[in-house]
Length: 127
Length: 132
Image 1 (spheres, rainbow over the protein chains, first blue to last red):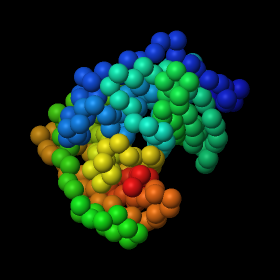
Image 2: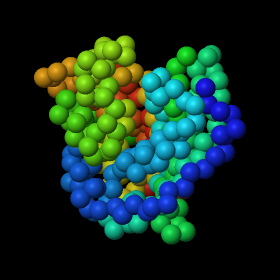
Image 3: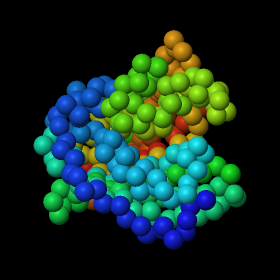
Image 4: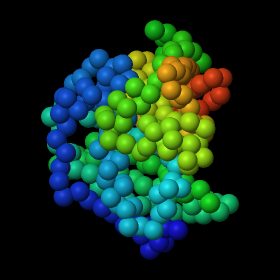
């Protein structure tokens, strides 16, 4: 059970992430994309996944029961090789539906003060 | 490539998913959850077999969307993970993606995507918005 006090909690990474052409290429090649300069639409998950896990690490969630419910991306501009991004993740909501706990985490990737991508991950903790 | 107008449908494309691809996606994305690689582990937590990362299915649907739009112009992309893509050993599983234009407004087209695996819909409410 997620501690309800954690809703609204934000975790901001101390370190920035340097987006390399190699990282984009590695992701792109899996899906058959041949443009390695511009990150594919879902590439940002490779940065935000670790962040949102850090945020939820001591939250009381039972990770063995977590499944990914849905995912949304808002892309202000594509991530490109050479970007230096900071991630901040916030627990936006936590609610209980029919015994399943549903937690939504928003992660924003910023380049200096420019918002580049926002993502929302909904995690379902099965009863 | 079809003209982008409301009702236009894009040809389905088949993406093959196998165990090797799951390992490659795990390494590219950082998601090393063993349910996507270790058959014994997957079965121990009640799954029928190894399953694909939901985000891999979504990444492949994202590639389809990029191909429609040109890779610089995907503005929004969302989906629900409604059924697992089960990936048995030594098997290529076909994920078939198709899409159609459902709305055009202010130079932005909304595309509804369909993702099917063994004739089962695996993504729900899969939608993208692209700049045209």
